[in-house]
Length: 308
Ligand SMILES: [Zn+2]
Image (cartoon, rainbow, N blue to C red; front, side, top):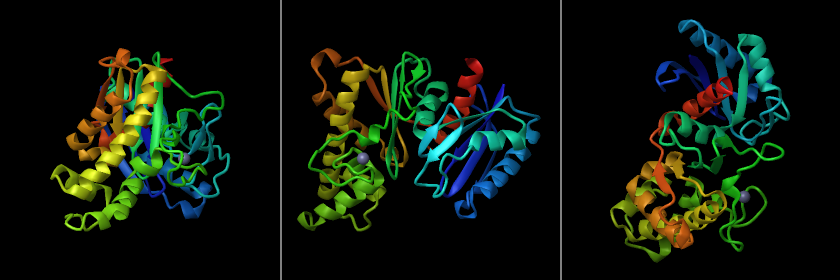
């Protein structure tokens, strides 16, 4: 069985045909060119999709992961900051029309956790929390084997769990959301804010990667920022563990490339924030799908739908 996974982004659209063993058979990336408007973007995606579908002799389903607020049931992008002007656009229907293949559309962070269940570290698990640390912070929850969507399908916004009520203003209108601290944007801002206190720091470029690299080398500014970030993640994950009692927490997104330095700090802080009866009931791991997590996530939604 083969599924086309489409990872829809504000800059690029990455797509690949994936089989159920998680092998990528063929792939293609095109520019989104969102400024050209919904119709043209749909045309371009469909054309590229048709090309690679014919290369593999057909697929059973198309799965699409998109940022923003998604109406999975009706296949609509309700709203997404990445796609200005797309309000309640029927993305699934339009792509089905042009490819002749059934489409399932899901929020990209929900798709991420499903991708982990099908193809990543979550294989064989029924209760998984996925958290993506990128430009923003996304989240998805699988509980009892089912993706948690909530009443309107927009649940599991884990990036907007408040970890500091007096914290930074968040894009969502609240203050101190996890996203304001543990995203690449948050990390970069923290490093800038604390740099005066650490004049000997080797950090000169205030990207999340540079900060994490510095922390790994014991740089005092890097270590300070990592402490703040892991504390915020520890508070958020501690609460999520109390609510969902997961077997596995998978951390993905660009920031997760920091590797062990991040993972060990988050593990330590999380343990401090969960009650003893939960100790040793969960594992925290980093995603190993990182570069293709979007494609695998999207494809897994297709497989999940075929299965059900
Ligand atoms: Zn927020």
